[in-house]
Image (cartoon, rainbow, N blue to C red; front, side, top):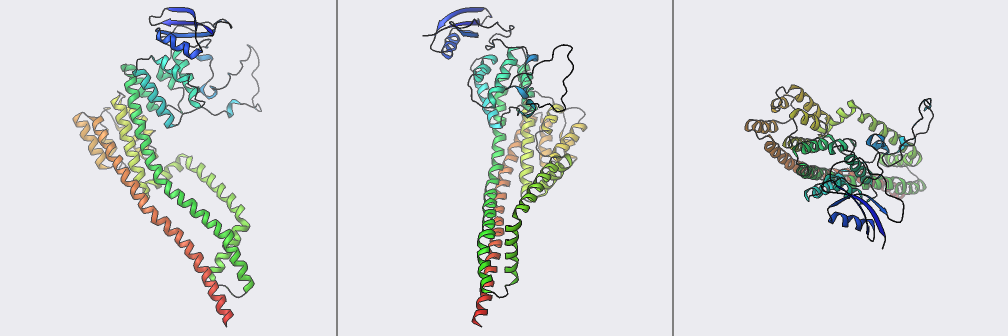
Length: 454
């Protein structure tokens, strides 16, 4: 059985060294944990000597042999790669006009909302079981999932080892951990209730995912019907119509107007379909870029709110998200103005976000927000009235929880209404096209057969 040389710390911070036999390193780490030791370095006794110890940190920090300080590590954008070589002192700056930078093409690791939910839940469970923050992050980093989570959790562990707070380490990954997450963790660190705050974050993101799934499920059926209908149209226009057209040409005679229009559309699609595809791709790209501009985003959000069935889904989802996020922040001790700034970036609609920004600017005492929100006409009267009741009773979080539940139920009704209305509309459009094709073909057949009889 192989022997390993270890360096560890006791719970009191005392350094211990020794050798143990174990089948592998994982088993050795479990043995040290049962002895109440936190491993810092583990090496094969027959190999090289263990690396130097890092600077002493908190009790219970995970192993970080030969780790450099925070300022010498690469930025998160290149966390999975090697740090760039430094220039020697006095060397002239390198010209970068035509220099190929590999790091600029490397994607920044980030977690999806589902992965973030899983990570938060696991970290909360480990902390609730009594593990220290460093040990918990080390346990998560050792799993080796092969996904972006490995690089992110490893960097978080290293930051904790170097003495950074968890909120500071999370702030290094803004694409994964939004301001809501970081501020709640910071509040949990200040109050000493980090595990409780992480549990609340789990609940929050579970509700966010549930709302997204409702909207996504509402779009599944229309998307399937659209794709099937588009495929059927292309098949009919490129394969069915040309065969009828060749048969009509052999029979001769004058075809009815609907049939001539249909045959012309079919020939145009076959001959210039490639040009049409290029134009559609170009228009889609141009529209997509235009909608990413502030003016385009505002126009899109305004149109979404005005659409008959879609507007109800957008409003209900935005108001439920607003109430849920603001209530979660206020319940964890975040100030009202700071919470409004965070919620402004999470509602998902620029018009509602602008209303929140204007309301935040009009809040003078930092406590009353219902009156400013009711002045723009974006937020419904019922929402602001319920919020005002919560302000008067001193139970803002309870009022926001009721508002979130109310608009969650409204979101369910809006989704059901959308799917109920959209199904017959899609069927009607497909039936109109199929009916036009059938009538055009039948008119041509009747016209030609009547000419043959005469």
